[in-house]
Amino acid sequence: MTGVSVVVPTLGRPSLTALLSALAAGAPAPLPVELLLVDDRPAPAEELELPPGVDAKILTGRAAGPAAARNVGWHAASHEWVAFLDDDVLPDPDWFVRLAADLTGASASTGGVQGRLRVPLPSDRRPTDWERVTAALADGAWITADMAYRRAALEAAGGFDERLPRAFREDAELAYRVRAAGWGLVRGSRTVTHPVRPEDRWVSVRTQRGNADDALLRRLYGPGWRGKLDIPPGRRPRHLAVTAAGTLAAGALVTALLTRRRGALTVAAAAAAAWGAGTAEFAAARIKPGPRDRREVVTMLATSAAIPPAAVAHWLRGWFRWRGARPLETAL
Image (cartoon, rainbow, N blue to C red; front, side, top):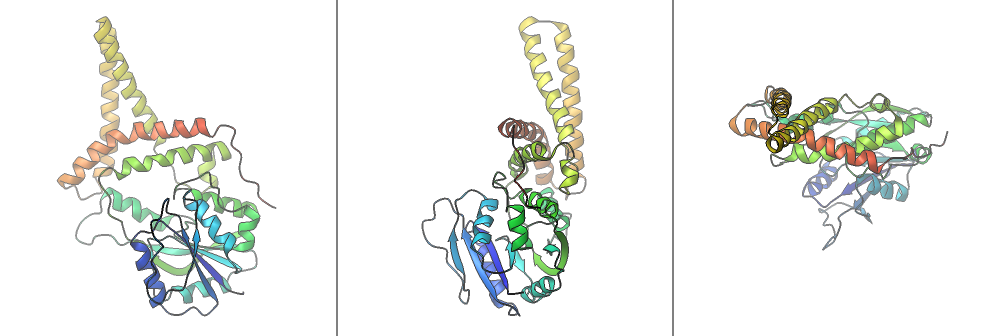
C-alpha cells in the first residue's frame, strides 16, 4: 500500500488540540501519512490553531455536518486508504503503528477496517444516563470515530450521504452501501479513547433530533432498515404510544371542560393514567442503572416526560420531509 490519509472533520473544539497532540506524541507511522483537517465551523473568526509538531493540511468545509465534511476530506486525500477520526477522541500512543498493521493486513476484498473504541467511565459510582449513552459507542458497528476505508470502496459507494446532517447513523448507512458494493468490513487492533464530554441535563432531549434521520433511513431502506444497517432496536413504538396517550388526555380534558361531559372526563383520566404509566416505566428504566442521586433522578423524570413527544415530532418532521427519497447509487 502507498500510505494513508487521516481525515478529521472539526468544529474547532478544544478536544482537537488534545487529539493532534496525541498523534504527534505517539510512535511514528511506518508508512506515509497525510493529515487532513476539515474546518467545518459555520463562521470561523480565525484559522485553526495547530499544536507544535503537527503538520496538517486544512480544508474548508461547508458547515453542512460531519458527512459532508468527511466527503470534502476523502475527495482531497491522496492515498489508497482514508482513516476517519472524530475530533473528540484520543488515539493510543501506538495508533499509527497498529493502523499500519490493520491496513497492510487487510485482504484485497476488504473495504474498511474499524478501530476499537474505549470509553472511560467513573470507577467510584454508577454511570449517568449520558455516560451510558456515550459508552454504547464502544459496541457500535463501523462508527467513524475511528474507521478506515479503502478509497476505492468510498468511490464505489458514493461517499457519505449528506442528507444525514448529524453525527448519527451516517456512518452505519455508508457501511451498508460499501458492503452492498461488494466490499468486506473488518475490525482492527488500533484503539482510541472517547471521553464523555460534559453536557447539561437536557442533552437527551436534544439528541431526539436524530429521529428525523431515522425517518429518512426508513424511507430509503424500508421496514427492515435497522437490521440492514446493524442498528439496535429503539423505543419509538413506546414513545408513540405514550405521546398518543398524552395527546388524547389533553384533548379529552379540554373537551370535558368546554362541554362538561362526564364521558370526556373519563377518557381524559384513563388516557392520563396510561401516559403516566408509560412515562414512569421509561423513567424507571433509565434511573435503575444510574447513580440514583438527586440530580440524576430529577433529570431522568423531567427528560422522560419530554423525550417521547420530541422523538415523535422529529420523526414526523423527517417522514414528511423525505417522502420520495431514494438511496444513493452504489457502483456494483
